[in-house]
Amino acid sequence: MQLINQEQVQQRIDSFKDQDLYIHLEMTTGAYAAHLDSSKHPAANFITNAVIRYSHGSIAGSGPYRVGLKMIQGWIYSEGLTHWEESEPERLLLAGHDSQGKLIVSLQLSRVPFG
Image (tube, rainbow, N blue to C red; front, side):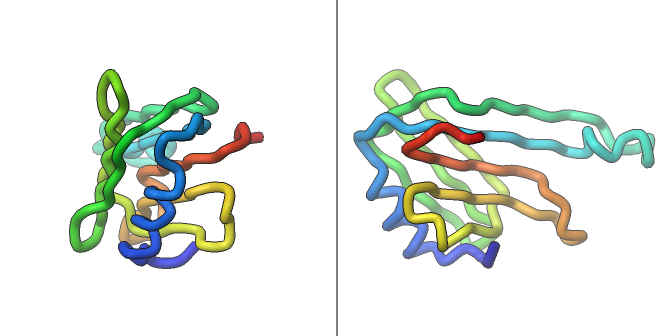
């Protein structure tokens, strides 16, 4: 993965709009590491292979970034994104890593289910 290029990510977001897509969205604030450091509050979210369709999507911020996807009946919003994978043309893979390189948040969109 490489640091987010806001312009290229926006182009990818635009290329996926108005299509049925599979989403993978997860976030952790230390759920995996709470057993090593009791001061970390273990919290996490995870959803995978739900089908969504959005009419408008945007990436904003100056890093870390946030992405919002407007659907007919609501929004999907992810914040803290720092990296993306450019080599996956059929998928948009975004991640947010902390200063130690640990995964904090992941937002992924795909035309095919995640394995």
